[in-house]
Amino acid sequence: MSSLISQHKRIPTGENRYPCDICGQTFSQKRVLTAHKFNHMRENASLCEICGKTFSRRGSLTRHKHIHTDEKTYHCDICSKSFSRKCHLSTHKYIHGGEKPYHCDICGKSFSERNNLTKHVLIHTGEKPYQCDICFRRFSQKSNLNTHKYIHKEKKPYHCDICGKSFTCVSQITHHTRIHTGEKPFQCDICDKAFPQRSGLTRHKRVHTGEKPFHCDICDRSFSQKTALNRHQLIHAEEGPYRCDVCGKFFLDMNQVTKHNCIHEEEKPYQCDICDESFSHRNILATHIRIHTEETPYQCDVCGELFPEISPLMKHVHIHTGEKPYHCSVCNKSFSQRCHSNTHQNTGEKSYSCDVCNKSFSEKKHLTRHKKIHTEEKPDN
Image 1 (cartoon, rainbow, N blue to C red):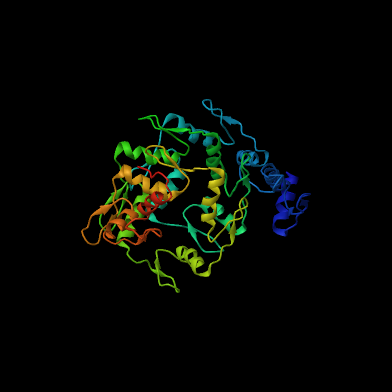
Image 2 (image 1 turned 135 degrees about the horizontal axis):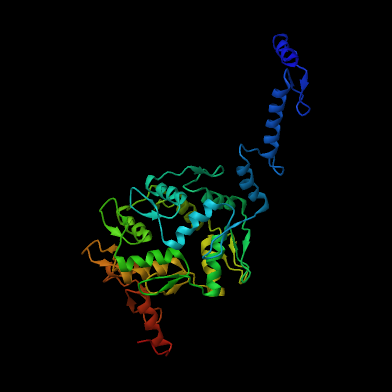
């Protein structure tokens, strides 16, 4: 009884006889000090000794520590892939079961993970929340922004062990390596045709389904591939918004103007390390190098034919689609390739002359064939 009276008397006087040996704070009652020390014990129990981050629950601290140790204690019993958290394993298992519980309210497409749906929705909204602080270009995904920044740093940390070519991100080198290995892991479940990239399989499947998800907002025509839509829209855009100050030619974007200006400046800063030939554009050099390497990275999604450049592939695709985007301004006849349209419109005009007999031709290939007569070389039939 006397001890209780002593504790009670210290309350009005403010006397604090019990100090905490951890933080120095003092208390008027011993039981309050004891309760206070439990708080320190909980803090220490929830403190990461590696990075100093604190957590309100010990279980959260345990999960956090997997970041530092790279420990992955949860294993998929189907493919043996491992995860640091149980929830990540649960999400992963949707892949094997074919379950896609997250649906886009706009187009109905389904996803196995919520974050993939979140990224997908940005396609419809056009939102690009991630901006480059150097050139101010915007991106819908943070990973694309991080990859883009390598351009400014001129950093390509991923190298091909076979040919030594360097890349800015791991997905690029993965796709490139399949050129050497011939690996085609993505197979069509309808015709068994295989592709080195998932995107190639996705485009190919539209041949079977007839799906044309890309629509022209001017004439409502639809296309199975975005590249075909872009080419089609050039018909409507007779003049681009960007103009060359030297020759007055119009372009659809400023990047095209910059490349075009090298023609006037006669600047060729990009040199081939193999034959020392120089070029005005980096992409022309890259195309030229394929002459030496015999690399054909562009593949037709329909028939599988390979091409060293994107432009002949784009022309080739017209064979399958039947698209004829080039029209004669006189009779409105359509052609699948621009050169055929130009030849048709120049009918009657013979601008190619033989320097031996002065005979003229409307097409250069006809002149070339004709010259073989003079050289006694047998012309091709």
